[in-house]
Length: 285
Image 1 (spheres, rainbow, N blue to C red):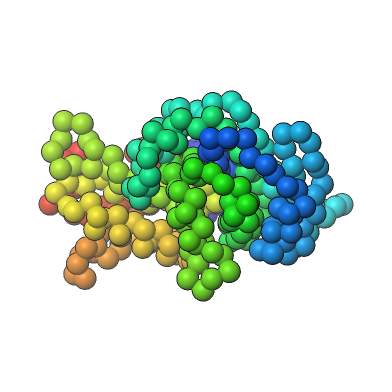
Image 2 (tube, helix red, strand yellow):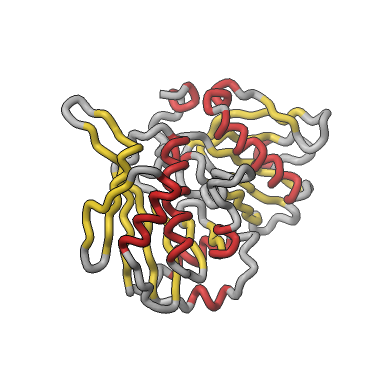
């Protein structure tokens, strides 16, 4: 157990035992299994189809294997088609926190078909390998399945197909957390210029999210700090155990940190950032 979990061990950890996203589309897609298999191989290496049914197809990734006492189990990813209307509340939450989604929002709300991409048996993978596999496989799928947008409901954000395909995992400038990390913004009712901002996505892969409850600060600058330290934690997961302060907006700012229960759902332990008395909420002091 991580050090910061010991004092808050009764709090949910926010970990995603299965990771999934939803592709929204207007019409039933035509999925050519063999063509899709070849495209997934292009990004993920050794892959085979282990199940092919009317509404779902499952791929096994033999380069990503979990070793158990009596068996070796490859990680799988399942593609499921559904003509059930997308969950309106889930989509609404994601659209509210999708700062870079500049497409017609009514268009995605009117989609009647969704394709769900889910990892299976990936819970035991080292987190960077899990992220790597999911992103590469999803990229290969989105390349061949036209959609209006992708709902990363675990991180509460919608990303357009065009934007997602602009982040090719084979390119040097590839961002492994694109879609898998979001910074959310919440207004405090009845309070002027007071907000809660947090990251969402790190806890889902076994790391620690961040939050900041503040007033009278530029939200874009706080967002940049949260993203920067979110990526730092992804690259240095053990650093968060002993992180007592971070650099604030200016080089001279030292904002204290401590682990607390998240102020905004989902319940999880986060690294809470205190921007100092001048910029903190009155409830902190």
